[in-house]
Length: 136
Image 1 (cartoon, one colour):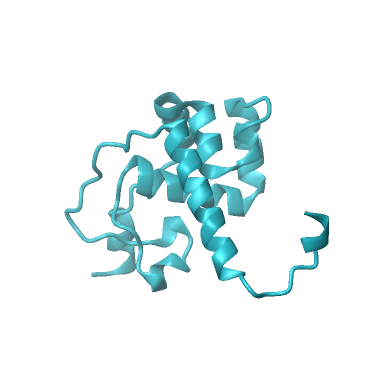
Image 2 (cartoon, one colour):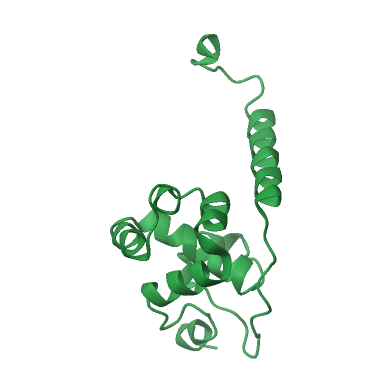
């Protein structure tokens, strides 16, 4: 299967950023998007216009939101290590794979995820020199 055929199976293929943002905001709202993505344009005075302006200029934030769209909203299979290195729009999915219903997300679950990530980071960094330790 060619890369073009695989990309056509990607829910992001041909999807404009404004449509993606509107779908996510309509379904989840700004508060959930802020909690799960930790992107500031969804936290401080959020609007579709300001979010689009920021996301068009900021590749890392756009890719983070596209990941959220693929794996939380469309519930596509997680990428393997090789595909994980690729931008979300370049990833392929097998032919015939259909998106599923969006995950039901809550602020409580977002906080649990944040705490788990922080614990994982702390354990990964245990024993490493922390120049900020005396300031904590």
